Length: 494
Ligand code: ATP
Ligand code: MG
Image 1 (cartoon, protein in one colour):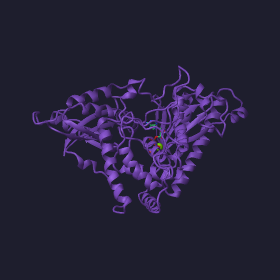
Image 2: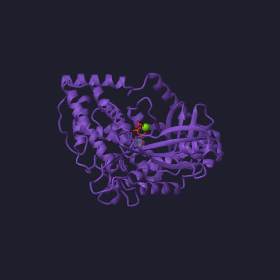
Image 3: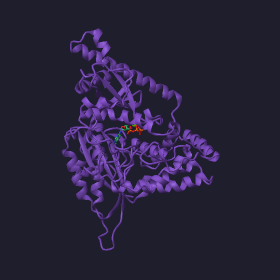
Image 4: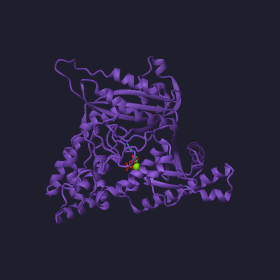
């Protein structure tokens, strides 16, 4: 038995459900949920090159520490993948999540300094952005146009074996917290694949759910919806409950079961492993930690230390996700009896027509690297703004668009520049027409507001308090460089 309860049914799917699975795969291919062979080959080549560069980095760093060239070559290092690529469910435009496994003579500083320099000289690498002090320190870049997230973990070994077992629990004992976190993705992906009864079925069902969630605008961890790993855990749980069902059955059960889930009961794939020693990292535990009790839709990773993948979910995003699950359940019920097609599940939600009130959060900068940094910071804090907006009694729903939209403009007058960055126009005519000669870069995040006025309340919406507090707090953050970055929030009434 896989999972924390017995399965709900051991039945195999019917002939017609198998036919529906074939139809589903055809539609998924038409919708580009699978990537073409040339792209898969390019991904392999990119990964091989990254692995070679990591090995080169470790050899050079070891030699600079006084190790002989012969011994340095024996130390070895390697790159492993995690995330959707490792799970075999990535779409054509997905990133590759990678981790460098490094020996103990290498430090994280070496990685962010020397490995970064090696990457910067490599043809095909662009837009490299190193985020060194985050929860999981990471270098993000494009390699032949494929987005790569590269993290590093230092293992308690003098040499890195090529055939390392990522799930060996003794590995974690001597690792620091950041390394444990950086290694967690690989361990989660490996364990997820062991915790589902049939990997092929899981992959087809998960591709379907990822495509649906993307089309419906509820696929994103950072702005408060569910990210790739949360959707993967949900699908895996349904696979455990119906171990012999094919993917079409799993998809139909998925919407019913997850749409009616008794939140905040957690979704678990196995019993949470407790810390074995007092100083160890504490896994998710709502009985012990008040913070964990605040999670509205806890979806928990299986590998020690288990984490909640959905700590960003707000009251609004929870309502939106549950609403989408319920509508999808009705569509799939019709697909299962031949009264609708799988394509009906993948209609896009038209976010920009849904509401009458929107706000634009405009991050801008005078160079593109600063924009990358500033917009990353604002996006990661957007949830703070959403929660502030939800405190307004007039706002029934604060709905973020799942991604920011980038733009750039060369401005020759101050008023055009101000308009582009979302600021109020300069006060005087002289100032408005003052000449500038500058290119500005921007990224705009949108939030749709469902506003409900009570009969007894005035019919105007004042969110200046929430907005100003958010802008002030973000500008005070260490990562916000006021010399190069600007943050403005603009209200729009459709
Ligand atoms: P996608 O196809 O969108 O890239 P993904 O599963 O690869 O899907 P990413 O957002 O790229 O998702 O994240 C990569 C991995 O990082 C996840 O699979 C997971 O292991 C880890 N991760 C990301 N977000 C979280 C989170 N909120 N909690 C725990 N782990 C996370
Ligand atoms: Mg990914």
